[in-house]
Length: 338
Picture 1 (cartoon, rainbow, N blue to C red):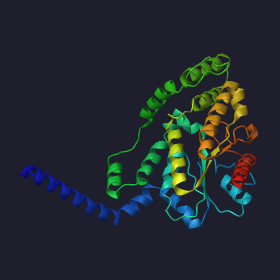
Picture 2 (tube, rainbow, N blue to C red):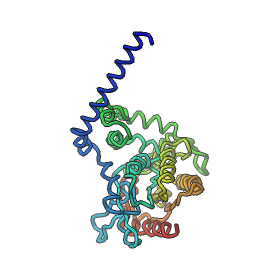
Picture 3 (cartoon, one colour):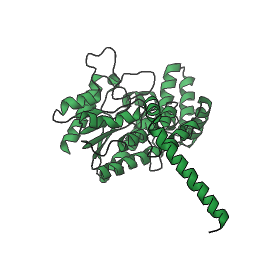
Picture 4 (cartoon, one colour):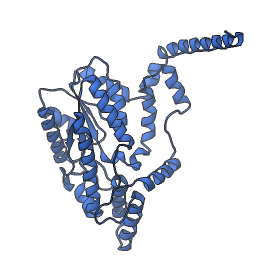
């Protein structure tokens, strides 16, 4: 070997050895502290083993959002547990989560575990630019660094140099505006628009022209931003769901995709039936794509009435007791059939 190349190879070997030693030192000194302070996702991965649960329930705030005036404040996962007393349901929810986060939580569940069923909530809003570039996404992306299957020191370096998707509010707004211009959908009866941006502006102009109050205009146009899209295989959330299916197959878990219901009555009233039709198309895409792959898909669209949605000033999947109960019952029936 050329002497210069030999020296270079030795330097690389020395550097690799130093990094390996530093990684071991970091892992056994400060890593545990950094993990506990900077990542709440890993503790969710450990819950099924700690609780001896055969059903892992992965959701966002839809699971635990309740109304102050309700006597029954059980979560959807609590109601599911009551409906399936012979099983142990483990609640692994976290606000603003989506399929990409669920995948990281699932793949970090220890190899030895009692899980048999993985329930994954599918929130159709999470497929839109509004959610993909949400301000809540940045801290989740930071936590995802800890969830990687990589050396601890490498993860620490990524965090130090912000080696993850991040943006400030100004950058976020630019990303959302650009994405909404590309957020297209197939033609739908009575809708003369082709992208979310076109529909958003057209709807705002027509509502303002007849003196509609600002709160209603805001709610209606947010519905358009959230749901005026065509979900297909190129959507990052679909790629995340594909990863979950493959993971469940490897780990011999039964995947259950729970399509959360949105407020179709209010959408129909504020925006028109065209947007409801898009909701149905996108839910059907999830059913048709994943049922042949062995996934149990529970489509709850249209199941919850307007009166059973908790929030009235922004589109959410937060339900009152009757809505949560209806979802839990549909989910329990699907799991029992499996």
